[in-house]
Amino acid sequence: MGLLKSGINEVIATTAFNAAPIGIHIRDKTVSMILFPGGHTAENIVRDGWVVANIISDPLLYVKTAFDDLPRDAFVEEPVAGKTMYRLAGAEAWIAFTAQAESNSAGTIKVTLTQEKEIIETVAVHPVNRGFNSIIDATVHATRYRVNRDPEIKKLIDYHTGIVRKCGGKKDLAALDLLVRYIGE
View 1 (tube, rainbow, N blue to C red):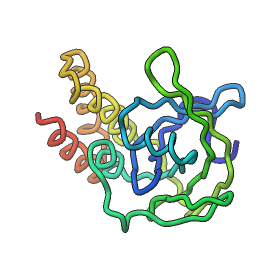
View 2 (cartoon, one colour; view 1 turned 180 degrees about the vertical axis):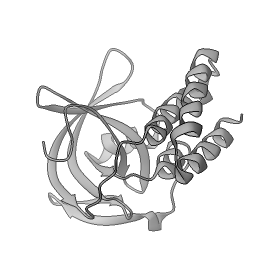
View 3 (cartoon, helix red, strand yellow; view 1 turned 45 degrees about the horizontal axis):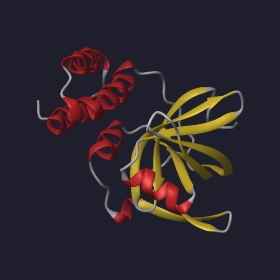
């Protein structure tokens, strides 16, 4: 696999005018994602059979797409494998996949992915930044916290908030402020 590595790769997945942070799992040459039924991303993948993984380093975009919709002009149409797919206009790189969805016993949808096209739009080096990484983790926890208000999940968000405040740059701090507004804290 080119841009993605073994393990779980955090990307912003796009479907038909929809974007959401998703983890793409790569284990033993199998590429997949796990989705929860009822969301636009799951509905679109089941219906259309494709998804685009957008690699992007903007922490604000991860937070925005976790909780809100983007305007249509945030998407770029791409012809791939005989289909019209959509990627993010600001993607540094993107990978288009055909997607085969199947329900599983855990009440989730397992999506097996087959790569069709991989493009690097811009070449940029991003050193490891614990603030950015903690925004990603806090966002994952916050999507669950908004649903169940579990105090244990809130402790995890607070932990990552401390790291963002200590290690993050301006965009990471702005993303944290936005995240706090989305979860109503």
